[in-house]
Length: 308
Image (cartoon, rainbow, N blue to C red; front, side, top):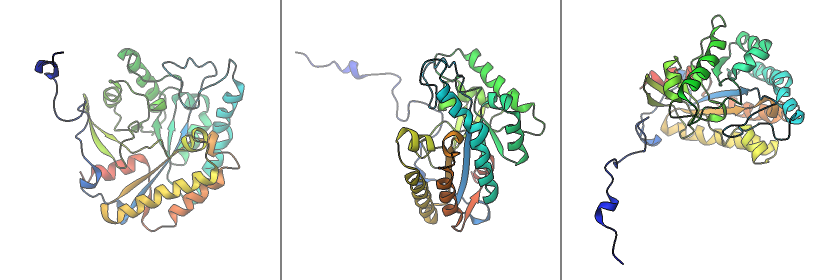
């Protein structure tokens, strides 16, 4: 048996680094320390997702988290998702209002169209709106023709940009699913930050064909769907994990500079009467510490960019 010839291991495109050039590789402890406004140590970023799941979902190329599960018409799951926009988010609004929390809502364009009173209530409260795609059955993925994806982005942003005074600066793809073209398309459409990549605790700069874009830390492992639905943890465990996440970031901020505590929520989950208390307890724990800055995603991004 002969050995492998040397040329077998030669690959002309091989080089040091990552398999893409979207950003410069770096580890967080070696980066420049960030200071939040007023000397705050942790930026608290609360982001409920206002989604619409069609009852006749195609589920291509995959079913996103929260998708319909049973045969058509899956009223059990459809009406629960509908509960979030009809009931749950309003309960969460009252909690956020009482605590004076700045909120960023990730919203499907279909929600803005189907629940206009909900969009109006968000805008009236000064909430930031992040575009969350058309709906939860229009995913962005490799294999989707670029022109089709371009149309999805344009259709989504057009809905929000018709609202007087509403400036949409952030993007969250449905189910965080992207194609190779997604970042280029949203940047070309005037989007300044994206929430799909979950590989950091702080913002970082990304490259696109149409200029820089900021990747914002928007984790999935600490959100309510992952913990309560996917992992089947209790509401008390969800509260404790939010507090543990915050406490760790708060401790790191003492020596490593500002941190971002991002909380991803779904009103059909956390907006339930028996769960809202756990969320409130976690938020009160965070707000009781000195140096916590409640901010929108755009405010956090602006503060970060000013120091780069």
